[in-house]
Amino acid sequence: MLQTIQQTLAVAAVQRVCLLLNHVLVSEAVATARLKPHAGRYVRLHLAGWPSMLPTPPDLVFGITPAGLLEWGGDAPPAQVDLNLTVEAGNPLRAALHSLGGERPKVSVEGDAELAADVSWLVDNLRWDMQDDLARVVGEVPAREIARVGGVLAGGLRAAVQGLTGLASRVSAP
Image 1 (cartoon, rainbow, N blue to C red):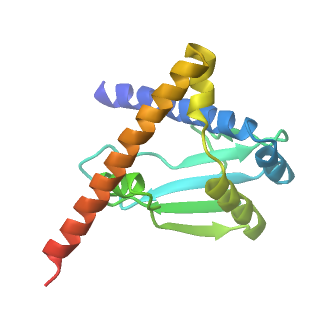
Image 2 (cartoon, rainbow, N blue to C red):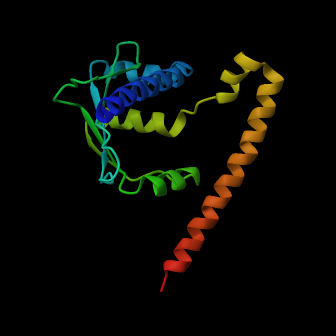
């Protein structure tokens, strides 16, 4: 029963991630324009070295639609994909802390070079404008203030993570 609940939650989470990714893609016309030529191609995301004590996340396969958006491959993704992205995930907590500090995880890329270049460009250049989305719900002024406070908190967290990372490297150095 626990496994059924985990599967249901995982499916719901992946569907929401796909919706969020498409929301970000739609917000920038250049993003969908870069993906449109790759319609019908598939990208697989694999988390390598995932700790055995945690539930193993499945590989995520996304198809690219003619509109330049993403479509989750679901339970029966195609066997053949055009681009494989393997993210080192041996220590998810450390990876999360490093990403808060502005570092990206190690990613190995195999497959179509043009698709890889466009996906890389999207990762480097697209950002979710949370303030704009929040303004639609609560208004411009509250959204600006919430974003300002969030930015201050994120900056403080980023500085703390960098400090902890530096401290950890000094402690572990001989």
